[in-house]
Structures are given as C-alpha cells and as structure tokens.
Image 1: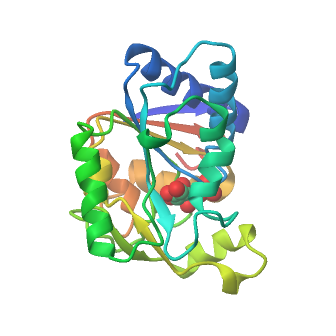
Image 2 (image 1 turned 120 degrees about the vertical axis):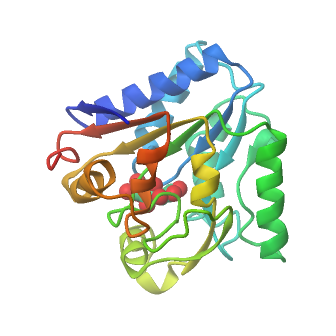
Length: 241
Ligand code: F6R
C-alpha cells in the first residue's frame, strides 16, 4: 500500500484528480471505477476543470460505479445515478453507452448482478477504481462481516451506514436499507485502486485498514492484499497512523 498524507480535502482531491487524469492521458480508453458520497466530490470537480482546459478526453472512457440504492428511481435526487450525472457525466464528453451503474430498479437482482459482472469482464476489467471508505470500514457497500469472495450482489446496509447517509435525505425513514454493490472480489480485480479519506471520523477506519488485521469485520483491510493500492488521506484521517 502506498500512503500519501496531505494537509486537507482540497489537496486530497487535487492528487486524486491528477492520478485519474494521468490514467486517462496514458490510456484514453481506460475503464474507470467510480464512487459516490461526499469524499470524491472535489475530485470530480477538478476532473471537470481539467477536461474544460482540454487536457483530458472522456470520449473513449468506460465507467463502472461501485453501487446504487435498491428501489430508488434513477431520477431521484438521492440516487447515485443522479449524483454521477450532475457531478461528472453531464459535464464531460463520456458517452452514455459507456456509463455503467447498477440498476436499482431492476426486476431480477440475480440477472442484474450477473450482467454487471459480465459487462466489467467484457470491458477487460477496471484499470483504476476510486474508493471512499465508511466509518465502519466499508468499501462500496460491503459492510462488516463481508464475504471477501462476493461479486456484485444485493446488500443490506448497516445501521451505521443508514445513519451516516441520512444526512442526504429529509428523514432517516427515507434512506433505502438495501443497495446493489460490487463485491470485494470485483473491487480486488481492479488493476489499480485509489482510496480517499478525509476527516477525523475516518481515522479509525483508516487505521484498521492500514495497520489492522485483514478481517471481514473491516472490509477495507482486504486491500492490504492488493498489489497496487494508493491511499490518499488528509492529516485528520491519518491522525491514528
Ligand atoms: C459510495 C460508496 C461508499 C462511500 C462511503 C463514504 O459509492 O461506495 O463506500 O465511499 O460510504 O462516503 P462519504 O464519502 O460520503 O463519507
């Protein structure tokens, strides 16, 4: 694991956007894995700026998002589909047919998950996967007690995650309790992984990920086994390292 400690959120976002931009410059038909949540917002903003300056081109880029809430329509402002459209996709020249996000409104979970895995395989795998991390150590929506061998599947969100995500909804009752998420196996198959964390509330999860035992209780700890992981953390998230 390569750990980069930076001063603040701004610097974390800049470094992450630079790494993703380099990936796009080196391979203009890269397959990128994206995350949602608060953490990557600054990264997406900087990627849009770099695109507007003419330094990167998304015309041949393929994207796969980590997860989507189950049974939340795409046009719901809290869906991850809506988030990605607003914060990145509609601001760059990525082709709609190259965008992949699990369909939370699918009729058959099994079919949707299988199709998602097949689409990643047909794209020749993910070149660079961007990750955030939950305060409980989750990556994607792989909650503690995860099965490391799982591929894309339906997950039941932890109370801690539902509580954390309620900040985006009018009330906690509105937060979906299930999601479709890439599994740990899917994430671990990405060729390169970049995990971002900022804020003191992530410090314990970062400590357990980097210094703790590899255990399903801390899903991100499995990243210790991946050959190419870069963790970019601000001083607060790194404070227990
Ligand atoms: C989002 C995702 C989650 C988040 C994590 C941190 O697609 O997969 O694992 O990365 O919950 O969320 P924030 O960044 O909002 O603290």
